[in-house]
Image (spheres, rainbow, N blue to C red):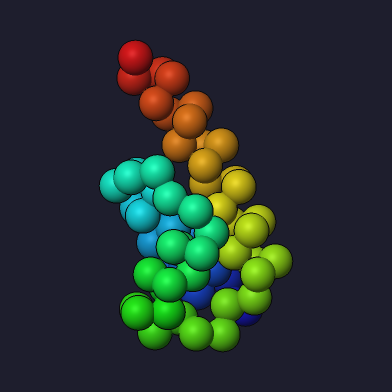
Length: 63
C-alpha cells in the first residue's frame, strides 16, 4: 500500500472514530462503501488502534 493511500485511509478512519464510538466491522463496512474493498484486517487493525490512541490523547488535552 502506498504511503499516500495509507495516509488517506488513516484520515478516514480517524474521522469515522471522531464521529462516534465504532468497531472494526463498522469501519470496514464504511470503508467498503467508499470503495476501499481490498483493505486487509491487519492494515485496518493497525490504523484503527493507532488512531484511537491519538484521538484519546487529543481528547484528554482538550478537557
